[in-house]
Length: 101
Image (cartoon, rainbow, N blue to C red; front, top):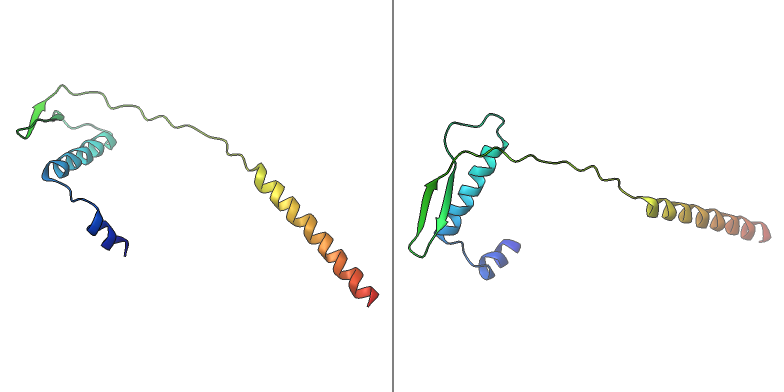
């Protein structure tokens, strides 16, 4: 159903958008390769007449920085503690009711 809605309400990609997307994918693939190829990367210029490719000087691949984020799970521990306390209280109530009956 989602595919039906996307086809019905989403605009279709133009040829220019498809070419740009393919170029971006190719650039991303070449950035991921450890040994760069000897071909020069190209830049796409979009004008009103169409797409033109121009050659550029090779650039050094950008460094990917990895950030180690410490995740805060204190809310989970509070919830578990609350559940355990309520469970113990419920068990004592059940035992007390069963003894008085």
